[in-house]
Length: 172
Length: 101
Image 1: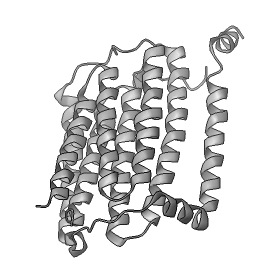
Image 2 (image 1 turned 60 degrees about the vertical axis):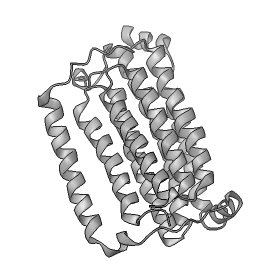
Image 3 (image 1 turned 90 degrees about the horizontal axis):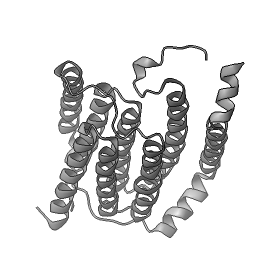
């Protein structure tokens, strides 16, 4: 096993361990903190797999913006301690069974495919080359994504108008 | 060499399965969104691995769009949860039983 391979398996353990911790926490703030660790591990994995620009985006957008948005909502609504029922075999049993069945199926498919045995060679996509590639070949998709984000912004402003508006609708 | 391509795919699928279990098992809307984020993250790992395997930048472009879509999805999802929480004072999906308010 090369050094890069050892780093890959270490990052895999960090990502999966932090994700499993995140989904089992009852306190949502703890869950989000665990998820940040998982996303930082993913960013390092992207760096290892030759995507430094995406690694930076993962840190800025996923681990930064999206997780702060989660924390912000959890804390403003004062719902750190949810009234959710405790873990029970009736709810976790079928879910884990479904996840394991899905996992076994895909692992069988992947291991039987000869393409999956090809060893990955290290190579790096420079951010400048990546940006040039995006705007030369996929400029229309970039515009569509920007439109989608604009629509999301309008929807968020409309839905989050605040309590005053909601109370008026209650009286009507 | 780093690792066989299949190991990257298996890591991505394991990450996806963790998110799937979270979505099915948790009775809490915020944790449901957390599950979706973990699943999208798994998909992104698979795309980056494939981009390295075939030495094509298109896979990385897909991850760029995936991150953009995830940002839009999370912002709209969270504001819907906030709007519903104001009405029902609960995060349990089972308490949302009104078609009109």
